[in-house]
Structure formats: C-alpha cells, structure tokens
Amino acid sequence: MNASKLWAGGLATALVAALVALVGIVVFRGVFGIHVLAPEDEGTWGDASTVQLMLAAAVAALVATGLVHLLLISTPRALSFFGWIVGLATIVAAVAPFATDSDMDSMLATAAINAVIGIAILSLLSGVVSSAAERGTGGGRTTQW
Image 1 (cartoon, helix red, strand yellow):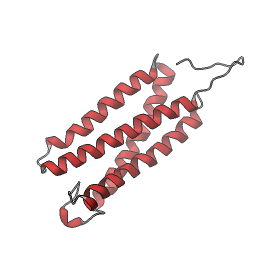
Image 2 (cartoon, rainbow, N blue to C red; image 1 turned 60 degrees about the vertical axis):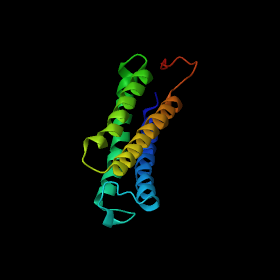
Image 3 (tube, rainbow, N blue to C red; image 1 turned 90 degrees about the vertical axis):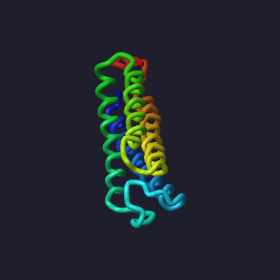
C-alpha cells in the first residue's frame, strides 16, 4: 500500500466532501428555499453552521481514510469491512435529522445532504484504495485484496 497516495486521496476526498456539503446547502436553501441548518432569514449562504457542516464532512473523510488505512494493514477483506462501516455510518447520518423537531422539508434536505456526503466518501476512498495498492511481480511485498 502506498500510504502517501492513500492520504493524498484522503485529503482530496475531504475537499470533495466539504464541497458536497456546500453545494447541498446552497441548492436546498437557494433553489428550493428550504432552511437547512440555519434559520430562514440567514439566506442562501446561511451562517456558521454551513462552515461547520463542511468541516464535519471533511473530518469524516479524513477519519474514513484513517479507518481504511488501519483496516488495510490489519484486516482480511478490508474493503468489505470498510464498505459496511461507512455504509452504516451514512445511514445513521441520513436518519439522524428525523430525530429533531425541524419541519419535514428541512429534515429531508439534511438527510439527503448527509447521504450524498457519505456516498461520496465511500465511492472516492474505495477508488483511492485501488489506486494506492502497490501491485507488482518483483520480490517486494504486495498487498492481497
């Protein structure tokens, strides 16, 4: 496993996850007029909660990168476990808004944003792992998937 490639891909995934959060908030607030994570009077760009969601998405991507790295060096069928863990965490993040007392539109929009962030992290990091895998026929150690 090329750890440098893995973590570079993890940083790129963190950037994408943060931008997915931003795009989701702008679309739901600006296009559909649904107040997501901020009062309605905050406008399309919202308040500090927009930055907080972007940071949370980026941190989630970095935590997922650390998780997949740990699984790759310690666990057989690492990508299977990684897929299950990130998939279940995504479901929790998508269902969590329904435990609040927000209106239904806001809960649905937040759930959709959270789900897309999770799907982006899972799909991008799965591809990063494939690219970062050192494969070769030389005498060095290779990782078996």
